[in-house]
Length: 399
View 1: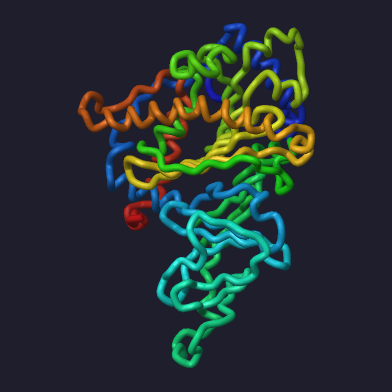
View 2: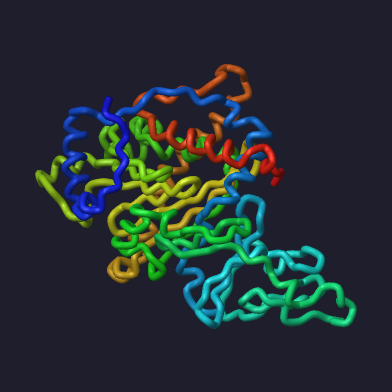
């Protein structure tokens, strides 16, 4: 059985595109297809309210992508988002520092900035309820009738700050206070690889989409960790581009990289390639556990973050991320066309996940089956199980 690979050697990564190209040629030739252990996934993972609450608590300790870095690139830029039930405010200060806060006034708990909004050239945030005013560093800098609050000193009433960073062209936030998080270790080799490909704070983001999906969040992510469904679910969109049921997967801790060779790869006749050529003839999924996918397609990546809202629904935020150098070379119609192609296919996955969710409570299945070809799904599900177990019953707070 050809098991999933774990990569750690820096020298090996130095020639990654050549190695990935050669492995893809072997895979599409039908020799030793990559497989793992078959498994079953209990339906309780996708239905149980207690499990949902445990997942919320565990996931709040991990980074999630919340916005494109381009949205908060200049001093005064700001954007709000909702993440695992926590309202988030991102703001780039006049000092150039990007900060994240819980978007909640410290007086009576109103939202300081409107939900799902953004803007520029702003250095003050004024609560609409009683006009408590905060600056871009989160400090409380003004409030009416100051003398009425001797028990709430200004220096103790600033906005609650959260861990935040920029990586892979996206802003990542941990939605609870957590000291000393090692961002570099979290992104590791996969983050460094995307950085070398131009996915950093300078990347552009010409398209964005947000919606609520009527299925458990893990069903959506499972669908993007295997290609077994391509020839059937995507027969009207992208199936003709790819080989049936072929993936080249590697694990980086709980993160995964999956290469999806296109039929054109073997047809090119090349025995080796650089990143540019690989990008033309394969798609590469970079999955940053627990919730963020970047699908690299050569001159751009389409990213989405999926997090639970209820046991049976999830929040999806998606962005196109384009390295600045690539963005200059292409017209707006090129990016629009690629965004449409991406979502025409992904919408098919989301629709099937919703249909699956509607059938889970029927009793037809006590568990779902992962074939040996769907081993990456089981790797992800086991990693979520471990997160929940590590959090323990004392952390299973309701969202």
